[in-house]
Every structure is written in C-alpha cells, then in structure tokens.
Amino acid sequence: MKFIPKLMATQHPDSTVRVNCLDEVLEAIEAYTKFHCDEVMIDYEGKLTPYHQIEWIIEKAREYNIDSGKVLLLTPRIPRDDAEDISRHVMSLVGAILANVKAYRYGLELPVRYAIIPMTENVRDAIRVQQRLIKLEKLIGEEVGYGPQHYLVVIPLIETVERQVHADAVAEAFHKALIKEATLFIDTMRIFLGKSDSALHSGHIASSLGLKIAISRLFKWSEEKFINVKIILGMGKPPFRGHLAPHNIDTWIENWKSYSTVTIQSALRYDTDYNQYVETAEKLISNVDTKPNVLDIDNEKALIKIISQVTPVYRRNLVNIVKGLRELFNAIPSTRERVTYQKYGRSVEKTVIPRAIRFTAACYTAGIPPTLLDVEVLAKMNTKDLDIVLSAYPGMLKDLMYDISFFNPEIASKYIPTDIVKTIKESVDTLRQNLGIEGNINVDEEYWKFASMIASKIREHVDEEVISLIVKLAKTRGFLG
Image (cartoon, rainbow, N blue to C red; front, top):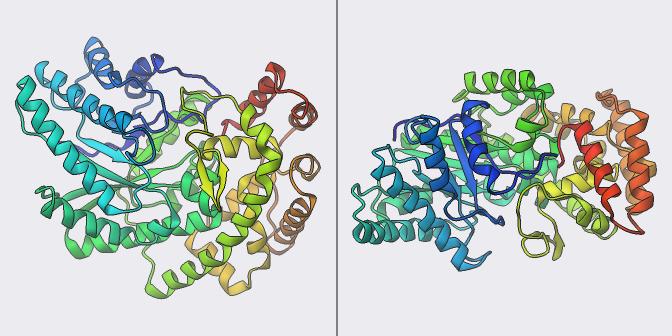
C-alpha cells in the first residue's frame, strides 16, 4: 500500500450534466487533472458500466502521462451477487483483475487495490467476495502469466443505521475473518460509511446520528486494537445526502472529523463554480485524518434511543408520500446509464422506492425536501434530548435552514397528503419560534413558478418540457438529487 487517497471521484447521477459510460473514461482523467482527485470509483452497482472501463482508463492515463497506481487508484464498486445478476458480479471482479494485468504488463504500479462491496449487512458477505477475489486472481494469474500475487482487498460499505451503530463490530469481525478465512493480515483497514441509503431507510436525523456513533466507535476500536482505520465518507450536496457543499464546507469539516477519504460526487464537480470547488477541495484535503469527537457510553445510549424514536416517524411519512410522487420519480432524468429503479431500487416497509438521488430530486421538485419528513420529532423533542442531538450533530441547524428555503406547502400539497404537509409546516414554525432558524437560501419567484408548472403538467403527461423544468430547478439548487 503506497498511499491512502484523499478525494474519491464517483459516478453518481446527482448532477444536471449527463455523462455516458464512454465519456466516463475521459472523466476519470479529468477527476485527477482538473478536480484534484487521487481515486476514482468505477461504479458497477445498478449501473451499465462496461466491464473493460478500468482498462480503458489505464490506457487513457498513459496518454496523459499519468502513472495510475502511483498517483491515482481505480476502485470498483461491485454489484452484490444476491441483489443483481451473478454474471454482473463476477464479470466486474474479473474486469478489475484484468485491468491490473494490463497495468502490470505496462510496467505500472497496480491501480486496482480495493473492491467496494455495497450494502454490507453481514460480514460473511464481504468475506465471501474476498475469498472469490483471491481465487479469481490466482486462476487468472496462472492462465495469463500475471506476475505478482496481489490480492484486492474488500472495502465494506456500511449503508444502514442499524449496522452503522455497530460499525466497530463489523470492523472487528471482518478483520478477524480476513486473517482466518482469507489468510490476509491487514494493519490498515478502509471502511466506507454511506449517508444516502441510511437516510433513505431511516431519515435524516437517524442517519446523521448513526454516522456519528459509527465514527466514534471505529476510532475507539482502532485505538484499542492498534489497527489503522481509514474512513471513507460517502456524502452528496443536499443535506439529506450529507450537505457536502461549498456554502457548508466549514461546518461539514467540523462535523465530520475523522475522514481519510471523502467522495467527490458529480454535482460537486459539475454543478459548482470551479473556483468554489477548488477552495472546497483544498479544505477537504488539508483536514484529513483529524481526530473525531468521541462519544461516551451514556451519549451513545441516548443517541440510539433517539434513533429508535425518530425512525418510525420518518418511515410512516415516507410510505404515505410515495404514491403521490410516482409520476415525479419517473420524470427525473437519468444522468448516468443506470438500470431502472423498478429493477434495482430500494424497499422500506415493503414499499418500493427509488434510490436516494432520484428520491431526493423528486422531493425537492415537489417542494418537500426529505430532511423535513422527520422534523416533527425535533419540534416535539424535550430540551434535554434536543441538546443531545445538537451537541452530537450541530450541523443539523444548517441543514434545516437550507431545506426550509425549499419548502413550499402549497406545491407539496399537490403531491402528498395535506395532513403530512400541515404537520411539517407546524413543526417548521415551532422550530422557527424555539430555535430562531430561518431559510438561508434566497429562492426566487421563478423557481416556484417552474415548480408549480411541473405540478400542473405532470398528472397529464411527462414530456420534454416537464423534464426541462425539473433540470432548471436542479441547476438553481446546484444538484439534481
């Protein structure tokens, strides 16, 4: 291991700019040369990425005299073998290994050293993939004369609150299994913590607190076991997905101390003023590996109790608004070549919903930012519990101030039950009165005019005008979803 990357460029469809799979080859080069990223996630999860894409990037990097492997890592996110076709899973692994074969023959340092496994709920799943990688590398090495006996190491991506609050136990079990089952001794572990899916399943409050507990427990575990834990934080621009945005960067860094690597998603690269982006990237790089705020046992217990109270409220509201947003889900343009959400979406309380970016985009378009789906719990919370929440995650107030700006009860009522809208409005009014928070983004009349036009047209027919209006709203916000 030569280095731990600091900025990981991803292929998320959260930008207003469409990037097809062939364009992603040059995009990877620009991630390094223009956006200062030293790692690129090659995403196969729910996505139609060609299996040879990593090889193409290695070849393109040589044209630009970029020594991939020495200054740039290429890290695939592999489809789960139990969530997508097993062929896509295996071919993604084989493609990653063959890319290293190509790099080896070019005399380069190997650029593919890790494989991200999404939705790590059971450590056995990650170990199964690790063992499969070792077998495939040995087989391919024997067949094609691949020199070094190099084993890609799995990075578990923990994406639910239920697992994040036990992130230390996941790390412990995975580390032991690596030694016992895969005969790999790892003194430096990369653990990936994702905000989007945890928010989608449990809401903004629960996912924020769950990540705080995860970071604290991983730090304590690493100190106890003398194992260097390198946390990858996966977050996007809207508050629901992490609020990693230039206008919030100082608050973000203070809130999320501990990261070694942070994802630089598409909207941050393409829907951000470049000078603002560079300033944001420099601040992220200069604050890696900062000691986190460590929670004591009593604080952890209090936060877990609050998580258990807030999650059912969010899920109840989520299930009750999904039906009214179906047309919007289908109208949100896809800016990457993904499979459809009906084929590879998510499920909450047996209700099929899109993945987080499409869901978030639909909510903003409907005038109901998803962070507000559990805001009634904050409004009703006693002073002691509210202090616990804001002490653990002070960024919550900035998140709400941003999203209150994009809350429009009149437009929201055209999509979702009026009783939910009324409760959210009353809760927002309570927080305004008790905490003095107000919207901090100036949303002009034209934005709401376009949003109203979408609400009027979408029940009749989703056409190019509706999609164009959705994109106009997204450009104003600086992200699709």
